[in-house]
Length: 147
Length: 147
DNA sequence: AACTTTGACTTTCTTTGACTATTATAGCAC
DNA sequence: GTGCTATAATAGTCAAAGAAAGTCAAAGTT
Image (cartoon, rainbow over all chains, first blue to last red):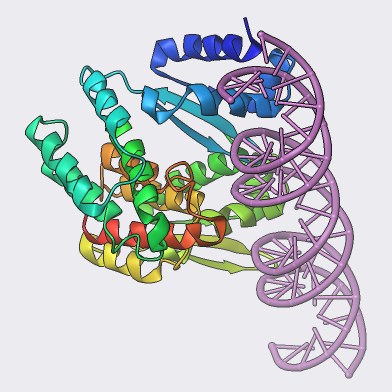
């Protein structure tokens, strides 16, 4: 078994309890006798939004990496959808999805609106046009993973 | 938890009652076993005018640091904050604001979390570093206005 | 070819300390 | 008493050091 797989399993075990863990990157690296950046590798290949994970972190003294897993029943449905989502989305495609989600009670009006605002061309005005739809899709995926 | 966070919480607790506190810098530093200038660090990163805090101080014998919180009605408060928000925001500055909003019940955990996710470096990974903080601020302002 | 491991370099946030600035007060000269 | 001065008691500033985590590409494996 590869080291990365072992680390992955270890982290998943920790997540089990609380549906989330807070890790110290260096500690973990130490524990598994690898370079710290391997932890990043494991996280970025295995704890991805598409699989229902959300990762937050903070640098500096007292820094941490927090990984949470959303385990709601509708999660499978959401995951299915996320898999199908293109890596770029226009404003109107976002709207299509939101309507769909509203219909299935995956979110309420208030949240849908928040997402709409966050992803609007207005909010993203400074992102150049070529990248905008890609960034919109990124934000969207991260958001619905965390609904 | 970081010392700075602990000190921040401690001070906020003291403020709760009277909407203000008067501190002695050295005493506080002593209490938390840190150098006095750490108190300044905490104040300058967490008790900023943008969040409605007002800090007065005096040196010399009998010196003090007084921190007060203005408690405007909700909408005024929001407007006030929006006006003061810089045109760029780091992830951690967003966090500071959200914590504040939570504290004053301007939004709930769920929404705060969504905003956090939407504005995280993760979501905005494809935005180049030079622009990221500006775009984050744009989205943030749009969101807050539409809260 | 795809995946994993490694390490040098970068970025972010916190802690520390040396140096500076301000204020109150005690003591002294008058 | 009044005014001046020295001293002690505070707080402020700023830059360096420290403590994480992130990035990226080269090297190694399968």
